[in-house]
Every structure is written in C-alpha cells, then in structure tokens.
Length: 205
Image 1: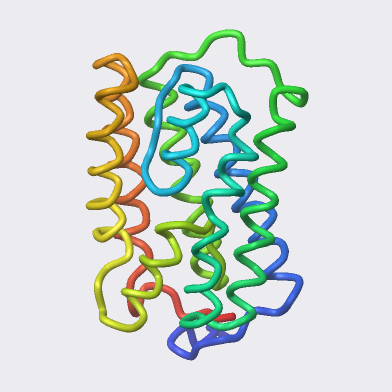
Image 2: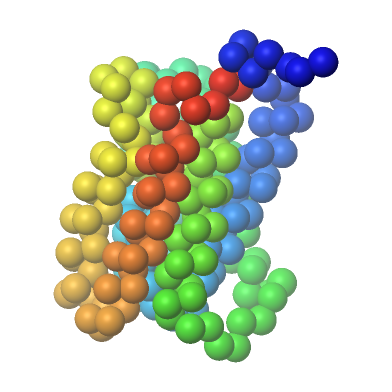
C-alpha cells in the first residue's frame, strides 16, 4: 500500500536526534574543508571563520560565542524546543570542528573542490536541521523566523546576508579564495532555497 505523502507526520524524538547528529557532522566537515584552504561562508559560521583567520582563536569557541545573542530571539519567537535543539546543534558543531583534525588528516584539498563539496555538505546539514526544527544558530534563526512568519524564503534571505559577509572577506582573504567562497555559498544556499519551502517536505517536529 502506497503511503499518503500528503499527510504531515510528526518526527519522533530519536528521528530529531539522529537528524541533528548527521546534520551537525555534515556542517562540521564542510567547515573543516573550508578552514583547510582558508575559505569562508556566510552567517555566524563565516564570521567565525574570518575571526579565526585574523585572531588565531579556534573556530569552535568563536562560533559558540557569536551565537549566544540569537538564542533570545529563538526562544521568544520560535519556542523552547527549537531553542534547545539549536543550542545543542551549535554545541555539537563547535565540538566536532575542534575534533575533526584529530579524526582525519587532510594534507591537500583543491580550493574549488573544497568550495563545491564543502558548501554542499553544509547546505545538506543545515537542511537536515531545518526540517527537524533546529538550526546552527545566528542568521539561520532569523531566516527561519522570517520564513515562518512572513513567507520570506530562508535560503534567499540568507543568501543576501551571506553576500555582505563575503564582501567583508575581500579585506581579509586573497581574492581567489573569496571567489571560491562565493561559489560555495551559492551551492549552500541553493540547496536550502530549492528544498526548504512550503509543500516540499511534509514531516514536522
């Protein structure tokens, strides 16, 4: 018997937890690719990467700290379950990115490959979190809030914010690295824009 895919079904707790684990691992691996060749992305992750390149402070600490102010908006507008899952997701990304260098050794990676595959990994990871009512904080929280309350596509809004961050990157990174970063940001945001929209996925948390 063919299941009725038009009827929304609620995710179970273990499904949410599994999506958060896989989603944060994908995001963390994409960030590791970017950090290896000094690329950046948008949102709080991109800002944390730029600050890491400038200051030498580990990405995980910067990423966790940058996201702290956004939790108030998440709690106020998105609810306690979303906020708790987002805090947990941010913490996992902060932890995984600090451990990946000990788990795998990346001696060489082509910047174009890092941009395309890293951007794709982050996009798929964020999409997984979005579909289970979680995020990796920062602009993701604001993007989800605007989509759910005003119908503004999360991917397109985030693409605009990412553009601002990437312009700032021209003052920090070599010119070619910024161009690769822009390409990766396009891949990331198109994955979200094409797949995270009303009617595309009927499950909910």
